[in-house]
Image (cartoon, rainbow, N blue to C red; front, side, top):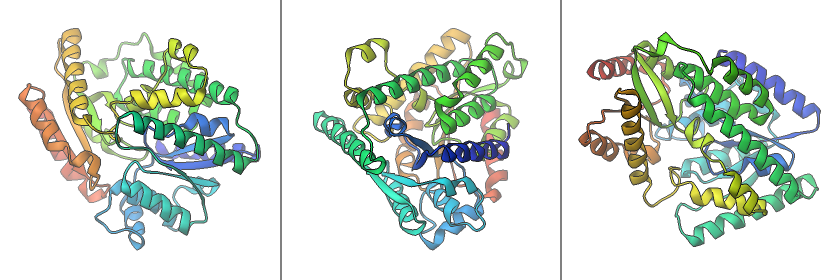
Length: 378
């Protein structure tokens, strides 16, 4: 399915949900937003996972300087461009403001203030200690109260727990997709659609797994194996095509759209031992040591994770894996770490390409040349 078909299907999906009385709440993508709580309150959670282009970025410059994160520029451009390229965003009722980064806050505020969207706030601590865990729990309770005021309905513990179990099953299913012997671009399409539509498409994902679980695929046998980390490849981005056209195949997406999403699950033991659903969501936050939002030790944990993955892959498949570290231009979270990540991994014999870019179409040729050179080197 190409991105235009996906977005058309999603527009129809939202229209049907709105006709059923559902409200839609959008937010810039990151991995500490409790979408289960939004779902339990009767909202459709809409992650902003759409890539940009020159028009979207330029359209945002009325509000933001060009030195702002290209992804954030694009998110704002989705609302400010006329005519709109993603018309289903007219279906949004609320924008959830969170502090994944300073730009996340700014863009969410600008969207709310300039495009007639009511705002709901949800703040997340950048630190990892007992106080930050307590603070996250307080924010969960505050979000719950605000959603109850909006809907004029109580959100029962039972509803939240039911939603947690539903999303938990869904994410476990997506982890199976990652292990299938299929091209990275096909995996990415499944992940992108899954994050947009949520557990409603669980049967479709189940069928996809059944159709592909025993397949042998010659397309992935004689290619360069790539571990993809850093910023996500969002819907509408051509980067995955450049990698595959250059002879690479992404076998693991260590990003918001991929591992960072489907790894945020609970064991059956945890689900049965913690009855309070707010405590469950807090528990997940406590254990999310690989999210780039939280410090300290993000870089150390990330390097350890990549090193272990590389060693296990080589031991199991007798092949090496190389790293593409994708950095959206002016994204401070990832750009600050890129030099140290590359240095430490290459000292251990793991080859790394730091790929920093924005969404300008004029960059496509330069990106292609850099990726091709990296593939030849490995």
